[in-house]
Length: 345
Image 1: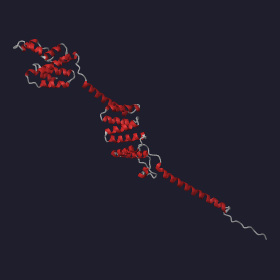
Image 2 (image 1 turned 90 degrees about the vertical axis):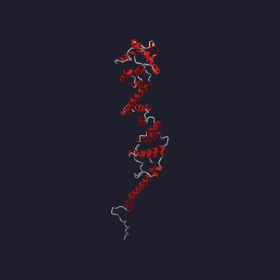
Image 3 (image 1 turned 30 degrees about the horizontal axis):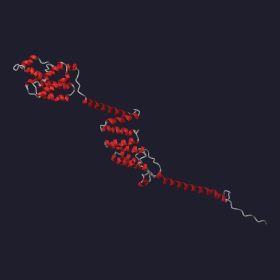
Image 4 (image 1 turned 180 degrees about the vertical axis):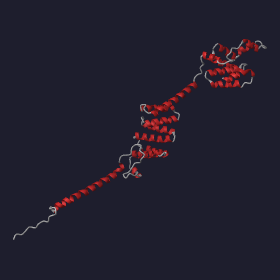
């Protein structure tokens, strides 16, 4: 009788056991390996996140964030580069600025300026300009000019800093330098910004008024034309100073002392001034009236009125005022006419 061979047990699928173990175990091993590699990569990413580049946009008010979305601790900030620390201080300052806490914002911007490397001129100019904006809210115009000047020195084409400095200079009544800044802004903006153009127009008008006032104040007195002077005096009725003195009247006044009239005529500055008026030699009238007034002559009232009139004609109202006041305050009855004319003038 022949001996039969032992029969290997079969699985339900008809596959050998070793093949079945391979089919089941391989996916498990691969899955465990994938989980291990994923966890390892997450750990490396978390460790390297502290030295990553700054993600917050320029001018953002949010602080630098950590991996879990919370603000970085002081230890994490110490691991940042000086520029990133400066940017973090600036962002904190922006947050204070938007909240209206300008003094706190200034402190943060000052910290950013101190932390920022000097070779980072663009960032440094931004920090100075931001601090100037905070000073502007406090109406500290001198500080605004100083910080904007620092910003422009680092970035000569910094329009925002130039315009802010121009506004501060206007507040400080430094219109000449204000005009220089706002003109530069208009050129850089190709004259497209209405706000800067309005500032330039306003400052130009103010400067024009100042120059005109200064020019008028320091101008040399100029005698009007003879025709104008004639028309001026002809506008008054019964004006004793515009009428020629009659020889007969002089003699009647001095009839008790013959020859006195001739002496008075020869020495009286007022009578000489009247003669110059008839000759239209108006430039010498003021000096002759001054001689009469200084000598206390009999025609002092008339000389005061005539001199005041010519002071007004040459545009020197300041010099005319004392002469007119003196005429008005005279008590002598013989100068009533002069008083009347003086009050009219």
